[in-house]
Image (cartoon, rainbow, N blue to C red):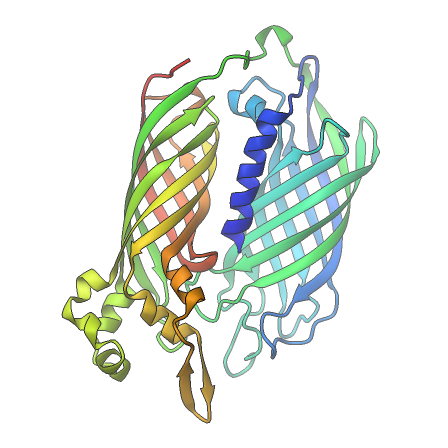
Length: 414
């Protein structure tokens, strides 16, 4: 779910960046501290999910505007950037608990040709959870089963009042927490919220020098090639809940537009330890239901695919997303069989491998952050990056990954 939402957001922000033009001349940069109170509802992920009262939370945000003379900021129409620290009481402290999350965020003005009061904020980070699933003491909380998870939030804010020192905002949005399939069950904790927020502003001393404002009237395009190697972690199913590695490699080519928008096409290879170990095992299910996979365990534990990627470059940092097609992933049938059945009188009944399963076997997605060793604004010919990502099967978490990559950028074309 997270990857699909943010993929749409990135495409949306790409369109906004070209459809609207903000003049930063003479505008004063400022930093801000925001304090918000939210209330809403935690959505049950399963019929036996614990009963919850209204969710309550507070968030503290630290951020700044980006009118300074940087290419990426100008081509994104000067978003606000910062860090959000959030606390959420999910409405049942004993069985669902509370979370404390830290999320870097981007905050964009939307509908700016009509009003300057509406903003869209999206953040991705990590969260600590005080209560997790336990099959004996807490069997209904299928939301999270690890104390540390990925955290995602997206909100639309409307400024009720604006002054030079304070903004008062009303917002609506959603939050999502997931461990990226590193332990099961992992249905995720999903909430819808309304929030009231006050933002206190304090200005920097300097004004933007209009003589140094970047000229963006001419578009600059660069070609690039990139390669990446990664190590992921996941579990196969609740009955096979040991953490296993996923080894990944990819190659991509594409274009960088105005040192900000990076997009391209690529191919990837993945090897799943959990698939391989299951296929090689003497498990009755492996010997009977999936005996055909034993003919070539190594090949059948691999995945090959192609993908399209989109990335927003912000100097040393970036947000990236991918949408891919697996043309070879035979062991996903094991994954589906083990994770999509039900028990009846002690007998496991697997769900048919129908159209939904076939689509999930084919469609992959990926979402995460990158940190570049050299500032992308300077268009270095050679660059390396470290990335943290969550990979998914049609939006359902597959594995969490850390990777190291290299990018070769060719001279720009004006």
